[in-house]
Image (cartoon, rainbow, N blue to C red):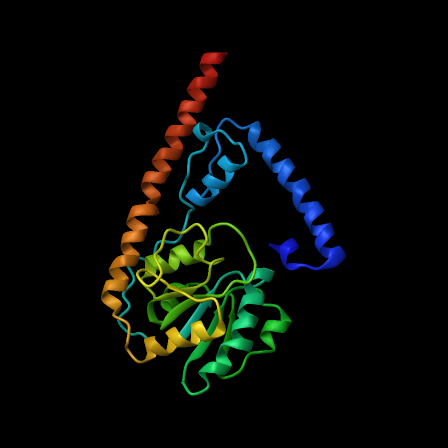
Length: 253
């Protein structure tokens, strides 16, 4: 994604680096007995790059399951939570501040940017409507009480654990193709797809006006977690795979 978005010599340099890293990664994978991607999307990508299907076993990413929290005192805060020292996160937060909050000037919402080590370029955008918290000890109150969760990522790859955690918390989720990548959630059923600033503002105003039925949304989100992100089953599958591999290698010796 970085080389595709770049121009000129920078793009050429990044593409060259990408192709080199891709080859090194595929060479390493070919030497493995078991390959464990974190989504079916990544499994498909590996198969397309000639990794034998029988070597690939999808495992669930570990996530903080917040399905027990109660969303009984919902406020008007828009939540974005992640490690804010990572460029893909603070750049997304800055984009949201600069492009979406201006479309919400007629509302009394706040944008809560929660996460450790936010850079100066993010902190200087703090005001009474943009709260940059820095490190927080416990994220569950934010997920329990905020109006919605946004993940307006501009770059990044792979499955986004924070989006899975938001699904488990039952908080309405607004994200784009990068944020929902590898997560089998359905637009308008278990999350709301947004690509532009206008998309985010549109759905946020719908939430504020009570125009979206939240009970069915909550149930649909829980179903995604139960069907695709069962941590206990995934752990058992992992243990079984490792035991089988150990027995196989012992037999060879």
